[in-house]
Image (tube, rainbow, N blue to C red; front, side):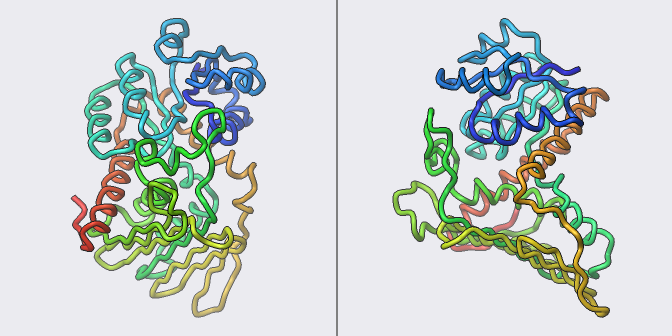
Length: 337
């Protein structure tokens, strides 16, 4: 049984991580014995959700008093580098929310800290464990769609989600905490999915704007194109829509996939067939993605698998974020290096 500590008991921890640790596939593998949060008001929340865990207001005190195998970092991006450094130096395995850091130079610092450290590092790229994205990846890899020419992903929201009221509910729109706007908050997911589906792109072009929420310090809308040798992946994201919606369209030379937020359809010369898919808006489905990620993490720890493959995936997300912001500033198509 791996003993762990959650760092940061905000919304993502309480709604995603904590329920996942209570999932039947995880309870025999991992146990949260401590919680660290800089907000003292969250002590009561910790006691309610994790009554057997001890609460701390700073990481150093936690590490002095608790014997733990791993940390689960659920704090905003600007804190990740420091918490990763402290944990890695003590040989503690690490789960960390996306993105890797708020700035690309901090991501480089993280790589230097983790390189050669005998710790398992797993970023929270939980979308890869969703039945929807697994099925889409399966169809792409199988070749049943033929050569993929175009992949379009659209995410429409009304505004940025609020953080915990006890700390800074608007941290997602504060660039010093988040590193950026909707491209960081939501686009990061699609940048690791891009690698999952197609690998690392060759070029990036982006248009980033604040179209509605002028009080935000960051963009509320992003349109990004990732270029591959024979495929274009287009990503449209906004916090400036009138309603919440998601859609996907993937075109291949032998068929296509489309998803409207409810149904996944496969169309080819024989017609259109619906692929049964669980409702991804179901909270239990979302928790199960984290549970699967935690299972993989525990397996890597048990097998002493210190591969940097997932770290590199997270680094590539940072490279794509950085290239997108520079592309928008310069109004240019940029090489991914």
